Amino acid sequence: MKNITDSFVSLVRWSFAGSFGFNTDILATNPINLSVVLGVLIFFGKGVRASCLLSDLLDNRKRKILNTIRNSEELQGGAIQRLEKARARLRKVEREADQFRLNGYSEIEREKLNLIKSTYKTLEELENYKNETIRFDHQRAVQQVRQQVFQQVLKGARGTLNSSLNKELHLRTISENIDTFEAMAEITD
Image (cartoon, rainbow, N blue to C red):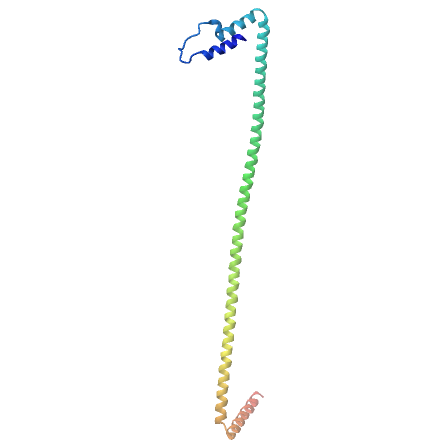
């Protein structure tokens, strides 16, 4: 313990401004100390256990590493399988989405055409209704004008007849009409 403390104390006292040099004390350098200790252990038989122990430790570590690699490869294989399944599901979903999209577009086009046809039909019906309404209003207007003209003509004819007809002329017109009707009746018999 004292050697360890002395080495730390000597480090503290070591001047940083000193020169760089090689440690020529072979026993103070770590690689040489370790090789001597291992050599002594191996030489006296305790090294057999140590080398077996070291060999066992290395074998255990190697087995653990190999197991870890094997487990990692198995996990990688499982992950690759899950990835392929997920990609297959993604492709399937993308195909279905494309199909829905195409169906949606065709349905939209079909509805658009139906709406256009319906609109044209409605416009045609409205045009026919408008034409019928115009025709009816025209006929009614013509009928009203005819009635007004006929009433005006009748008023004018009454006025003319009343002013120009006297009793004698009136009787003579009636008797000529009666003669005309009798002649017509004889022809038809």
